[in-house]
Amino acid sequence: PHAGAEKAASNTTAPAKSAASKTVTSKPVRRKIDWTNGSYLMRLVRRGIRAADEEWCAKWNTFCEAKKIAAELGQGSHESTMLKEFLEPNMTMIYAKHWARDLLYRSGGSQ
Image 1 (cartoon, rainbow, N blue to C red):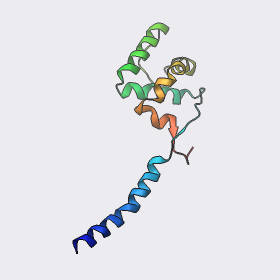
Image 2: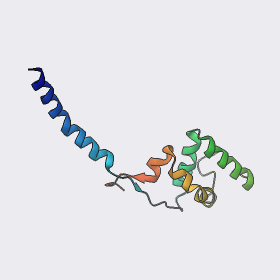
Image 3: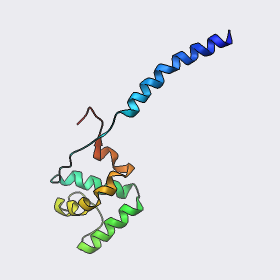
Image 4: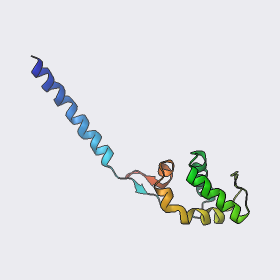
């Protein structure tokens, strides 16, 4: 009687594993970056700062010092051209950051 119960339990869990593996394997797709959208660019920079990513914050502070601009981010405080100048050379790094994934990637079926 116990073997039959174990077999029945394993049969009921197999489809759930299969469905879960299909969800995990759906590959995220990179979003196209609109380099003219200042609020989006600001969100990217701000997200790394709020995540307290030391590498990101150090790069931002160094960039701001070199450009003689304030490191504090307020609404509309930095021109999109300045944000683009910071972000473009750092895109390889930012694509690998967990805190940026939802801003840089979308699931296969959404925009």
